[in-house]
Amino acid sequence: MDKLIKGLHHITSMAADAQKNNDFFTKALGLRRVKKTVNFDAPDVYHLYYGDETGTPGSVMTYFPFGQMPTGTRGNGEVGVTEFAVPRGSLGFWTDRLASHGVSELRKDRFLGEDRLTFSGPDGDSFALVETEVEGRVPWTAGGVAQDVGVLGFHGARFRLRDAAATGELLSFMGYQKDETEGAVTRYRIENGNAARTIDLEETPQAAPARQGAGSVHHIAFAVEDRDAQLAVRKALMDTGYQVTPVIDRDYFWAIYFRTPGGILFEVATNEPGFDRDEDTAHLGEALKLPTRYEPHRAQIEAQLPPLDQ
Image 1: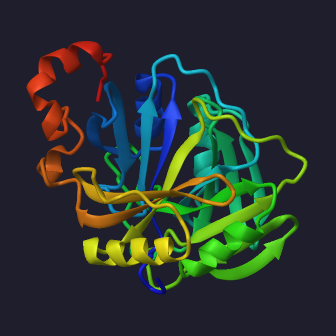
Image 2: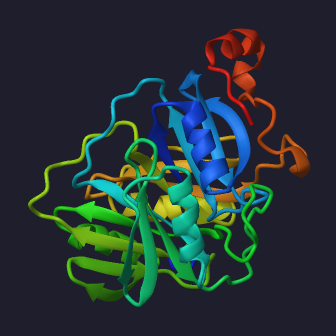
């Protein structure tokens, strides 16, 4: 599997209110909504995608807003913090901007030599902005955030685990290299991929298990270039004993899923075909796009979905 995984592809979480979720990511964080579609298994629920101009793999945060879903409980066995990369020197701007949007629990800290701003999302989601090198990434600027401070995509993610050893072995098998440790957190880093390359494992043995709900990460997806690479990864995982789903067509990528030893749901997603397969780049995320099997039921589905402003 070495060199097949290219870093993160996307992270998918759950929310209680579609409009609040949309406003937080497009207005507070200044990301672009690159796709408005529905949950494949629950077409009365939106699936909203936010990222850079084209939804580049490694930049896309996605959400299932399940109506009035109860808030999840933080704990072990989950992606505890989703980390976005921002240009160096921009945290002052972000502190002021997020405060002006009523974002709570803003706190600056430093981890492994990186300046960070942690904060909470509308459903108690845990986020961090991490100052880092731009590395050729271009943020979406039509959201009212200038290019020299805009969100570049993901920096990585932090898992909370009772025991990190087995998950660390899995990441190593996937091509990640064990990096530095600070306190109870050990960093794993993958090279020769995209810039969303770090996974931090935090051991919290005294914490209770997480309970999923609004504000919880549903799954975290790792990128591969194409379907051939995905099949090679699937075979390697199954040969090692993991129970992996068949390949599933998600319209904008192909996906496989498996559960990690720590309880987190992993996805491996292809970089192809991308979010412009059914919309012109200039109009990504504007129209409601439905999976083919739901298109005959469009009128009924649109009637069930709550109104959603751009």
